[in-house]
Image (cartoon, rainbow, N blue to C red; front, top):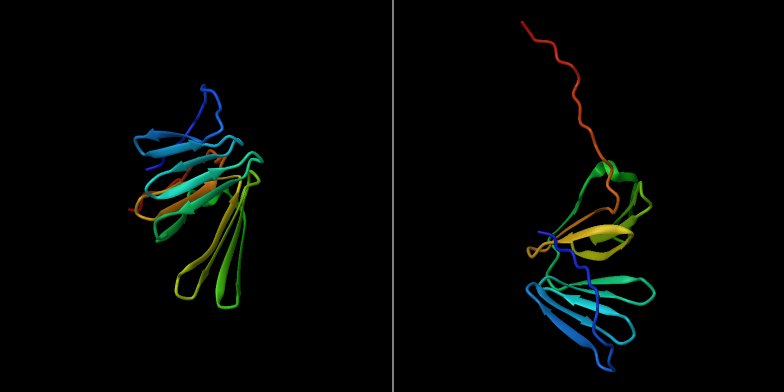
Length: 144
């Protein structure tokens, strides 16, 4: 299940942060323009410079890719007993994931990507501008 958040603040800014309770969690708007959305699975923080940081509250159990056809490059390297995946998408987004031999995630980062986080600790990353894909199969000939 994915959730999107679009926020338009029509109230007056005060010297104190304003918290709005939502059915799925809360949104806090700070006087400097930073916004923090919190759910049971994660905390998403934005800043005035346009950066976004996601802090997972749940253990990450699975990381998946939304559509491999959106990938323009994929590099896998091994160093210091860690595996690093660097993925570039056709629309310019990028994603990095590193994990140890025991499967423990060491690092996750992305730039200009879409991310879906489930309450079961599953993360699905993908392109912000997915390609339209047409699937075809070769014409088959009936076997007598």
